[in-house]
Length: 191
Image (cartoon, rainbow, N blue to C red; front, side, top):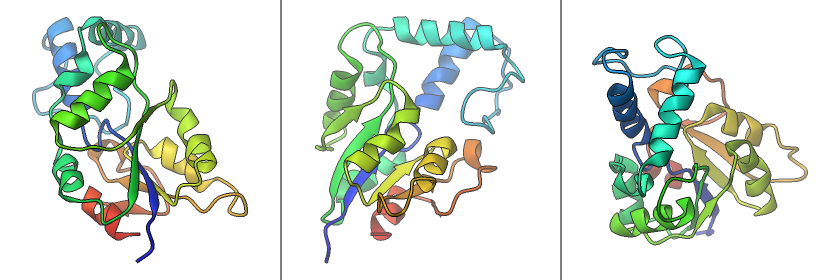
């Protein structure tokens, strides 16, 4: 078996940032989002909130002490903790700074609490992930943000071997990409 070098996003793949952000919105703007609403785009649409209100919700989230430590784990965490198929894996995420520990330290601690011990790389902007995975010479990257996978798919094949895989979520159903998977386990099995 060949050992693959793989990157995996955190929010939307391992951690339920969407649920936490929804709670901030519901607290900040009560009654604005229908109870059963699940976003159908990666970022919260203007359907219920203005861009200014989404910015306000971000400021509220970022003002919380160690906000990244308190996210609910998604099923991908258990799949990751059960094994990585012998592959080398990095968590690659883009997170805003909150009060308390750095976003990097919070991510590392959150993963430790989830019984996952992998290196973490935080980038200031998710648009930098494609260049990072190319520079790291990764074989694959799993993300829930369609734009990231589209950027990875657009890298010149002579310069990189990385394959981007999109974790299917309601907010990326309309994104056209080359490869989708339904789980973290399926991602590992692809290599």
